[in-house]
Length: 603
Image (cartoon, rainbow, N blue to C red):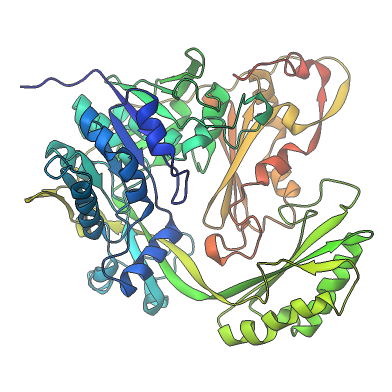
């Protein structure tokens, strides 16, 4: 009988569909690894793949997966590296056929054993689920799915790690899943190799945290980092690697000699990215992000420990996409002098010719280079501006016949110093895909795994009576008496930050550069402060969550992304720039709070 392992190495080679196609090869060739994991799927991606499948039954999966496999499959087979990806989309069986065909082309027939995770695709069963009493109501608004049933494009439950674990148990060395969680592809190898139990909440939580850190690729290794000037090089960016241990501790690092940076701060920023409350919910367990302990473990190495977990939720989240009308964008470049004033006049003229903004269900005007991502930071206007106008409406003809034809004529019929983009031309309506998050009973989502000719049902865990040991978050540092004159400094002098999106809610995680700064933040960086900073952008409530172990505050800005995803008419529909705007805010602090912050190395 084999024994459980004490240590495995898991390498991520992609954070989204369209990530660096060379990453898989570089991860396999750059150092010793046991597992190669890839994350391809987002809510909108599922709708795109569903449309592909409707047009061609042999499509509906992430084609980039095959491109990366061609580079690495022979080496992975030779080295015993197992590959796990959610590239199956809405057609994992077609993806399996394509992988097996590729293996044969590479002379690996018989050496590649493909496992397929199934059960997440609820689209064919929606009416059955509704009839069974599953309302699939919108998690934020409470509206029943019946309101939009005839417009649904895709519906996928988020599965956890256990089906992937079963595929590993059955001997698969390439595992294809559909909509498993981003963290499941990393957690599954740990459960399998370390023989973790399904109710070992603390260790499962550690796997969830590890998966969250590496799921977005280079965002954990210096990409999108507040202190970007401390990153030695952005060339040949190293993708994240997890050295995981059976006790639940792990190290996040990258291959030697690669670009980027791994530090306490780079991984802390990724931890607060797209985070809500500190209790991070997944199908496998609830991970307490307010329990994570970090420390530097040498150059480009950060050690994680102390992670606590709690029982998994009783229901699974469902991601549903639906047709929600059309939208179009138009852009004109306007140069100085007086670029801003001329851009405003051009916009006024355009809208009058296009019937007025009120003619459409939603309309937006943004000055790219001045105020498109957030209110202006400069006092002097730029020498040139990219004027963007956008509309959304359920009437496609209205967009194409009223909005679209009126853009290019402004080049000859308005202000001087104006031109259109060579690849833009006349705007045309494109389909809008709405996002509908819902919950479904686990019992309604049968999980199944196929490996070769073997088929295995995967039961959901029995959560009746499940409990976890109590946990008390770390106390907030008491702020010592501050001295010295008061100074006005950008918030970025005191903090780091990263922002992202969850539907129409922006997530903004702020990390203090010292325990003293964190104590100051808890008093002064309030939800009201953030709401005021994003006045005109955030139209909902602002929630604040304290994460003292990471010296972090996490803010959730409701109704701040123009509907989110493909609904939005904003240039920054995912709130990627919001953190930088917050850090530019000037705050008044005692000079003693600044001692040592300017010379601090990357933590």
